[in-house]
Length: 339
DNA sequence: CTTCCACCGGAACCGTGGGAAA
DNA sequence: TTTCCCACGGTTCCGGTGGAAG
Image (cartoon, rainbow, N blue to C red; front, side, top):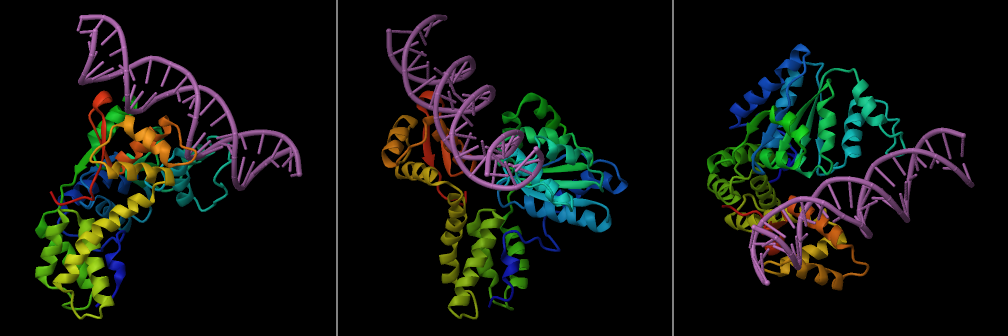
């Protein structure tokens, strides 16, 4: 049944990709100047989750590196590294062989100075989940580094531009925008077929079932592949030769729950209490939420901190904030569902 | 239209913890 | 060892905002 589960991992980047030729060509052309040793424009990759932004960006940069040996690349996920220090540290850590900078206590701007003075081959920095970046000013600093070209992956470009200050926004507006649309069901089937052929034994899953998985995924490749993975894993445990309709049926909700749980795990204890309260209500006003939170925990955080938590959860798409000031309500978001 | 009110979020500040230098 | 410097989560303070009430 399962031959090689690596091909079902979320971060796996296939050698061949399907259905994204225009986007690949567009990004390649933006990065092309690097091949001649010139700096490339910043690229803005946007689109819904599971539309291939990360995968295609990595793939295209890899292609470029194969053709041009003296181009480097760095991938930074702002979900994991969301402060200015963490982003700069991650980039520097990957670009230099000497790791003599240890976390903290290095003089104030030594990280940035090092990056500015770096004179290696041109380097593409893929900044993923830029929405999660706590300190957007670091973008401005990175834009000023000649030897680094940026590929910024973001859910919604306009939303990001609205949140940064005018100086940064005007520089970002001139970036090249590449929009990804959600996959169609047919496209998802092709993607799943590729993965299944590599990860599973021959004929382990039927066309019909791939279609069922793709149909339930609502255009989200991440959900689709996670569903395939869970269905295969369960079939493997059952010692089955083939994935049955029951395996698929079970895997559909499990896959969504798995992806949602991953977000929840990133929350602190206090943040989870707040999320639970919101989840228990259809929707709740801040004026009711704060006292309820305070009654449930020892040493509650200040209301200002709770507001920061709420903002973070909104960014994680765990919670929706509706209305403004007076009629503000918070609502927990169900796991992403097909629309 | 003006005032009020609840809430939002920026900015400055603080305490803590850990590595580096003295 | 002590001292210094830094990042970082949290708090305090406060001006801005927009709908509701007067």
